[in-house]
Amino acid sequence: MNLPLLINLAYVASAILFILGLKKLSSPATARNGNLLSALGMLIAIIATLASELKLPWGNIVGALILGSLVGAVAAKRVQMTGMPELVALFNGLGGAASLLVGWSALYPAVGVDGLALAQGISTFTSITIVLSILIGGITLTGSMVAYGKLSEKLSSGAIQFPRQQIVNAAIVVAILFSAFMLCLTPSHDSFWLCAILILSLVFGVMIVIPIGGADMPVVIALLNSYSGLAACAAGFVLNNNLLIVAGSLVGTSGIILTNIMCKAMNRSLSNVLFSGFAAAKEST
Amino acid sequence: MDAIYLTFIFALSVFLGFELIAKVPATLHTPLMSGSNAISGITVVGAIVAANHGSDSTAIWLGTFAVFLATINVVGGYMVTDRMLGMFKKKQ
Image 1 (cartoon, rainbow over the protein chains, first blue to last red):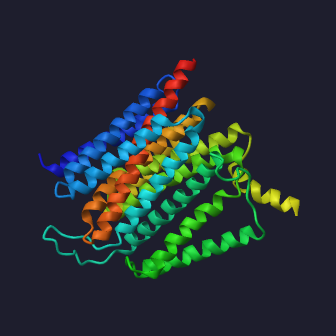
Image 2: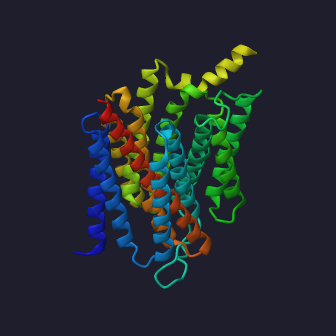
Image 3: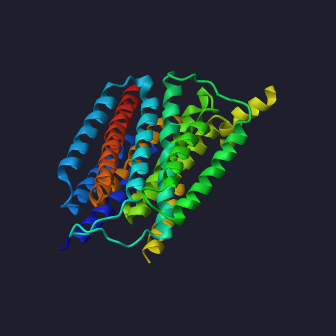
């Protein structure tokens, strides 16, 4: 059997384990098993990927894997029960940051086996997915950091508003769209527009979370979690990796459903949660 | 062809994701959120590929740093979810 076939079979197995895991996580009796199944899926995926990249810089990657596991494990073991939601927000932000970095690194030319750069340019489709992965990843990163700050009360947990906030946000959206367009025209790692998108997406993540008050934070984290799935999905399109697309879009869409369910449990609509800060500001003026 | 094939997979998983979670008791909202957050750490796979394919040393370091961050998300995410669910069982 050849290696690519085995790796793709392993990817199929882990996709199935993710689906079963999510399904089992939504019922109390099977939830813990579901989590273990999905962790097993992740382990299979990582081992298969390591096996497929036999010529990779092992020192770097194995070091990063070990160090990351240690940090994650210590954080998860040490956290108090009350601190868990904010830790999840923090982890979620790191996942978003990873997708941002993957998108960014894809702008550098790839090398062939002989060490020479593969000269073909980046297609429009790929450059759009690179921009999406940087953009959604960046929003997830800073949005989750603000959510973490608010939940852990390192930041004021109330809604933060300032005059003309909506106009500022609209201006940022326009600037993002323009920079994205310019970067897609001439995708390059030393483009000015790459810096623009990096900075704007980080700023925008902060802007969409600060107007949301403390009690609504769990809903926002669920939504940001869905974004980090979509960011992983975009990274999957960048790298032509089907497992990233499947797992990312599963998290992205089931996250949106979960966000909706959580809103309903509070008797509110999603737009009410997201924009209530603005409505309150309008009423007070 | 590749783009079409990937979009096909994407479309199917989007529908699957929408259908997967229907009724979740309120006590499971946070563990489910945390568990699916760990799955979104799948980007670690992309990061490993990215750390390998860069010609430029900057690209390799970006990829390596991405592996580090995504691993924290994966390992921490699964462990914290397991702890949450463990407590949940004891309480019942």
